[in-house]
Image (tube, helix red, strand yellow):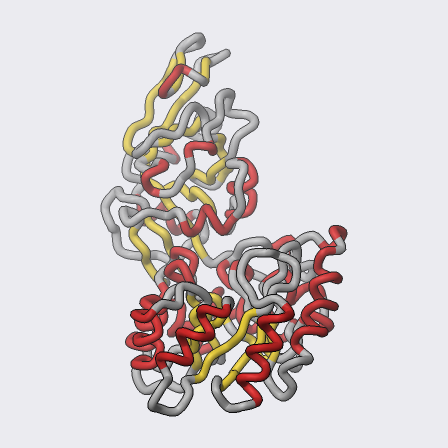
Length: 382
């Protein structure tokens, strides 16, 4: 079966052959649909989008354009350089870009030059931003409050000092925000504590927009929405368990290509360290993908039964043996011999095997699976 036939039979959009390197097919329509679904969940709040880490590995420029087309006007990045890329990808468009971390003199200059909004999380951030604005109108900024995560944010004393500066016109605040540490685990009770803390501290900044909810926070309900929500992983098709209505769609289909298929006899071993020893004669396909491409070594499966699965020629097949830098082996004994051949595409994760499922078997989360996709993985928007 050809690569094109394999793509068609697995329900993917047909696309030109791209050789045998791994391919991430990114469904822009699904990304837009997910943003709109989250926007509906956000009620009266504006809905932004986290496009940091190259839009979770998918390509920040393309993702931002798609999200802008869906209606998004607030984007969140980690570093100022990421924000510059978003600005340059959509010249002349009216939207806001918030920079979540890393404010130094160079970042402050980039923020002022490219109309980026730095999120000030420390007294040093506040002082640096004020210094950068001397002699001109204060640049627009945001403030992050510490509400219980103990990662980034102003404590109460520093928040009061920032509020005083805002009242005096020394800083021009566009947003007050904090971040939920356990939004995906409502039973922990931490989100309720953070919510109350955020309400108390954000009251120091009347008439300034407030933001608390990440993807998980959106699904915690209206109390967490405030004026602006900041979904991330939910937009890209991960953590779909948050969505009890099943409206979130898979966005990324990661494909690898078959390089070789061989029969291995009972008693033989598969891969590095001989971790998988066969109890019966099995048909093994070698794929051109490994941990250098972001398919994590922790996805290795010593027995082909307890590890992750992939989707080949219309059926699920198990990973077997140790994942290596460039190669991964799967057991295709149950696939008809004439249904799979070298050059054919196999779904690593996507609509048939979710990225969440794959991540669980690798002992991690969808965020890491997506952001770990290496430069050898070809991104193709469909």
